[in-house]
Length: 158
Image 1 (spheres, rainbow, N blue to C red):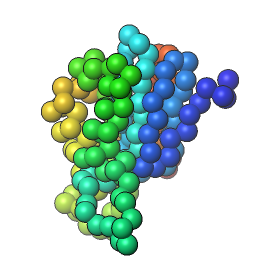
Image 2: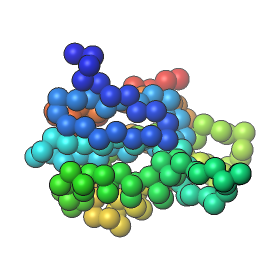
Image 3: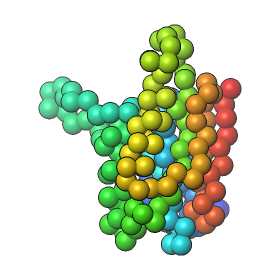
Image 4: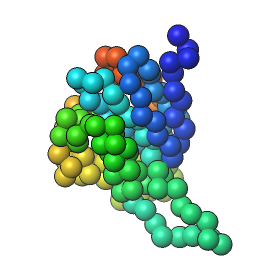
């Protein structure tokens, strides 16, 4: 049943319902957040690059809010609320946030850790329970989020 799979690219998201499967690849220092409402079997997957929005626009170009944890997560939660999901009924799973760019130096420059921290802070402050995390390290990941079961299958890439 390949037609029930929805591919989410970097700086994008999708909302779906069972029996759909949401998937994304190439999760390095990015963080992928899976949000799930168990009873209704509705979920969202967002693949985010950076922790905080920056205000840089060149020649009037708009910055994609799905690039940043600080703007992407509120946007995705609002989309779920539009289909009748309350944030209190959601659970979250986080994947990614690897330290992929060791050349940049120590932990202070660890973009992956900053992405994880920003996502955790938003979720906790919004009352969304974090069920599980597969984060950190220095390997890339891909994931499949099955909306029938709520299971997130993570594959690592060395």
